Length: 603
Image 1 (cartoon, one colour):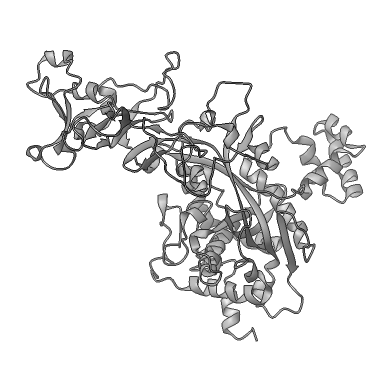
Image 2: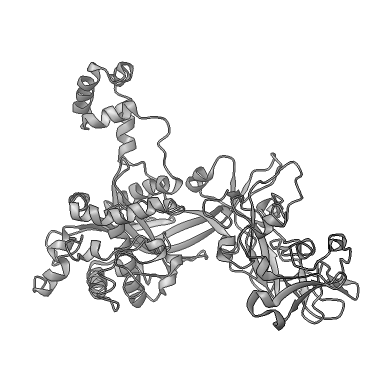
């Protein structure tokens, strides 16, 4: 086969063109095989222990081969397979898997000289995440057209298949037909996309990916569905990212170690909730400065906390950021440099903002590592296909990964203030709308729990991203968010990180981190809140509670709060301006800030 040389951005090899994804290149359709096909020598290893620990035991992070300059035949590269294999000729309309030749070399042309075009439809397993070619010859000779004789079943004219368009049969898919010149059998593509069409034609899932060999002993009972090869649902990447920081242990874990190490703790465990447990817990609490409830919780906790990898990663990041905020100016030279400052007592900021925003970190340098765990097809509830499908147990599985260096701004909000606010009945009732919709959705459980603090801080992050795009020199799509907002874990979190990262060793140029200085951050925050106070779609937007995909946004639209989906952890979902600035009977977390400014409280 004639080699195709084509460059992709390094980050695109993770998503959207990572392992298992269909890629259109120079008129041809290709698919990326799993990492067992990679040349390990040309894929450098990436170090990020805290991310690798969450991906699973026994693995290695490797960056896809990259190069600078013009690609040649000796350049390190990734392997891609042709998919779908069935193509039709633009000139003679012949439909087949055959590849043409020219001067003894394979090429993508028909014998008549016309270019071969990949068929637009492929078959995807509804739950098994498999994908395969549609057997067009078999499909064309099945169905129930009137006047078709039984001899059609025994047609052997394999080279007489055509993909034609006939206006006599109407428009759309009815006019596109697969026609056999041998037996004159003709079938429109409209038969292909109807519900259960492939199942009725007895076309079954092969339980493989296009680059895998058939597995006779691995049957798949899920049904196939015909979809366009470029459909978004054909590839749902499952990736995980982590900031490469000197991870600190959360305070709750340190307290837990102290409690377990107390001489009376074993007696509480032995009592197993008996009458002595409470008395002993009070004694331990007095000695260590914790609460008796904490002691009893540790004593009765199971071995499996049920943490998700992302939340587990954020726990360590949150603890590391808190330590940096207490450290002031950071003179470090590693990949995690943060200048921390707290709100001064004599600040001229509005009291409603100064009481809630208690710490800011100017992240001068941070390293982010993104890895691909695997992918799903057709349905977010389908089986996860790992990025590495090799069977050689002597080799560690490879997770495709890229490393990026950047800068950012970290904001920490007061835990007591946000706890008091989110416990208000009106606030919880508003957030409960999204809680119920998340439960009703088949896929939304993968999103963060929409508790009030998460929705409010998530929306504030979006408002800041939109404003920072004007002042930082970075496009909105270049900025990323990381939300730390959870009250169900031992260490409550309430903060946001807005950062930008580039796949270059030198990282970025400081256009974002300088805006974290006190004299610049205050005007930016006020401008962001003022932008959101009135939306161009008001009053429809502010009064709405059904916006976005699956109605997972409340008062938030493209005119006020939405950003690029690549910038958002939840793809522009779980947003609400009312929980930030108030509206109706709902008090917002920062609803009095603009009022104080407008009343002249700020000099």
